[in-house]
Length: 280
Length: 268
Image 1 (cartoon, each protein chain N blue to C red):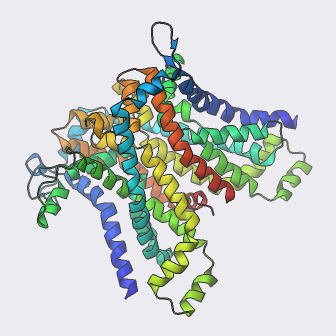
Image 2: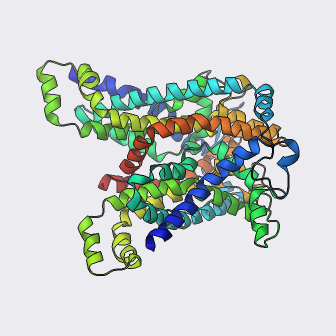
Image 3: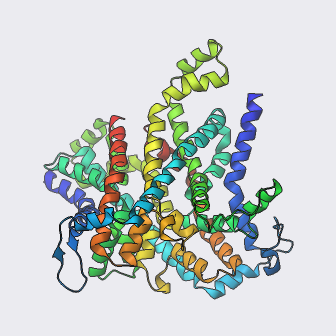
């Protein structure tokens, strides 16, 4: 009796996850070996899609761009660390302040795109106006490569730093008070405290942020889609290329090979992430 | 001294976080001639409400709102319910294949949504759910992270409470619903606010599924608005502002649970 209820309890979740996540992934792996056609029979072609992919310059361009976006990770780590260190001893009174920091995190990506598109507009945008005050001329934030990569990066850092700041605060709360007090007694100045006491103890948290931020950078697509939808292929990312192959070109087999490659790259990060969660 | 440096850093950070919102708000009240003014007008010289009424008349914004509310409410309720069912079974019950189920959930966490978009769409197509809200909602009714969060909450309940329930002759269902579920309220609140933010702002999947404007959610509608009203950014700005008000209001009420969830996510 008890056993049956266990299965009833677990069934909806198992069913939904199997049908809508696990099964499609298996399909992707299988279709990557086919010359897929919506109308005729599918032809098994082995790894031909993969060899086509590795000979495709668009693949290498988009892979390069996706890896380029991983550069936001160190920036995000430093920025969120600076804010976490600044806010941490005034936590209780800082609820409103934290609300401000969270606003970018909770805002839908489309609205984030609208905001930044307007800020980055070249002729009358706020950003170029501010830059002109310090003598920098019209920067083509949305049209030129690689400046538009930088724009998407700025958007990503703006959207993420409040989130990572909070994760770092959680990590800092775990550092035993005695260790920090001992440091103060030994006469460490605030800078030395950060370098010798806080940072070494934050290692697991920093590693967590590195993994999460890097894997979402590799999957980056919607940020690009909402900010600069029409950029040429060699400005795009892996997932943007996948989206195009799937929903604009309908090259299902080829797109699936690309999907498998993206999956392999991101699973390295996700696997590390799960290992870390298990340890905690 | 240190204190003032810290305050300055925080003020700058808060300023950077909030400025794009204020800029969008200001834009949404500007008149046509002020929109492209250079240097930009920080505060509109005249408040123009017509952008909002004009937007309301130009696109079926009310329908977008209703669609988004439907998607969000169903997603939140069923996500919390199904995650707590599964989390309870994983934390508190022994059954064959439990380990297998566990691995299946972990595997589901490894698969990015972006990678399975196309096969997922063909499944939805075969189920005749394409271009419907059901097609947006059903594939993501439950996710691995939520199950693990609820499992964690059930694991932290003392064994004595469960034993007392069993002594009183409670069935597993009663044990779950009447005895243990109420004790996981904080975690349910955390899961609620996370799911709320995610489904209210979800874009990529609804964009793939929805084709006809009367089924659009706010975010899909806004992205089309961005494409069609390139020359009238004031409407787009007004739409953006309207669409984030509900999230901000809900967030203010549930900030505590959101922060708790972030703390849980990083270990403690």
